[in-house]
Image (cartoon, rainbow over all chains, first blue to last red; front, side):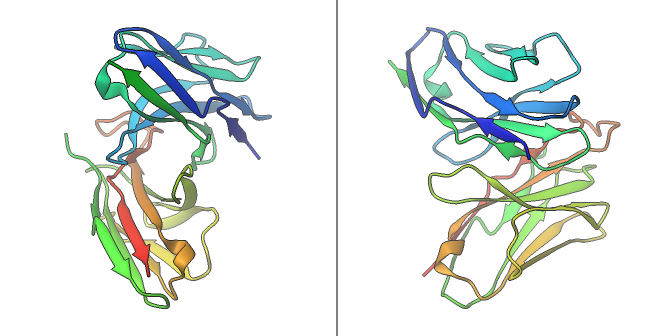
Length: 114
Length: 118
């Protein structure tokens, strides 16, 4: 079974600065997807970014980018120019290519300091 | 853009009662997923449906059942409710490989139904 580990329960960053959230996973598969979801106080689960394992290029979405290291099974999220609205719980998630369910990490709570 | 709709948003039930949660996927999405998120926990996969057939099953109690209807909406039926069933229940949907207007193989979540069992 696949497992996802987020070793940072809490992180904080000064507004306008850059922060990196860590995620590692364990799998024996070669094809899979990785995602970062954001859960603000409203509890809505919002897709931030996704990465296909077969793509070597790191995904980017505006101020959000990932550092995908397939051999190391690492998938970190970098948030540039942090904004107050980025404050949320961030979940890393794994999805097998042939299996539909998402397996989530335990989350990292990000605080933005004004 | 249209999002996943869940109803009701909040539900309060007594122990041993039943509850029905409804989910309306994003238009043209053919797969629906249900997740349970307990307080301070990450979401746990319960069950999924593709084209009205159960496609995958996770840690769903036998007291729970679900189905997907011809219009692709889904319902999660929960019976003999226990205190431990109090949680946030998410529905998510995804599109076919053609995309259907959103990224394929990507699950988009609804706002959730907060179930409280007293």
